[in-house]
Length: 329
Image (cartoon, rainbow, N blue to C red; front, side):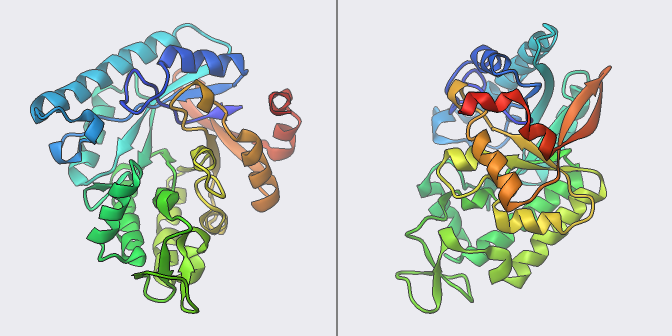
């Protein structure tokens, strides 16, 4: 089994367990591949999370840089151990704005002997974090005029800048904005404006199929998916959505089936682990999602052939037959 996206307590403040413990768990579970992909350091004090801010912005940003450098050294040491679980080293890009995307390019070039690929992710919209807590998500929505349709437009435009400028090999949690699209958030089905109660003209955000609801959102998402497919990028099926009690992994079925309509779309699987208990989390549910909802025929994964990354695939039928799933019985 494979995971292309992981974090740890050593190198991200909201991690749960140490990197050594996370890797040991993946090895114990007989993962074939486990990618180490800590966040790149952010370069703006305005984008620090509350848990990272001490009141000394310059020192806080330096701490992020130092932590990332330590991660690269540590990850390279783990990779050299030749565990039964193969290790590939990457980084998760913070596509906050064009300056961070440019910085990501520099980091990739400066550390090309260690960093083998990147995951392209959007965690901020209009400079506001959308997955840290509900308060931040609400502020992001407010920045878009309390209009979810506008927020999604901003998100996908920013994601397109990331795709166009960086061409990340893996596009992470495609519809991360869904995390706080909860049952108690009602939106006007036509305009996308937040409303106070459910009515004949409104829908629950948690139940909405956004591509079906709004043609402009479908068009933006489709453009982004086509761009990824055009350079051979990979779309991540990320089970952290299931871990956080969403209906589906990222991307949800509406955007995942839209991706399937794009020639050349290839999916990889990730747990986005931040601790030991997250390794392989909800993979049994993800298998059912891929089999029964997406009717996926093949799952792709990265391999390291003498230092050169290649994309390979297995039929879902063969994956279903793996003894790996006995751990979920």
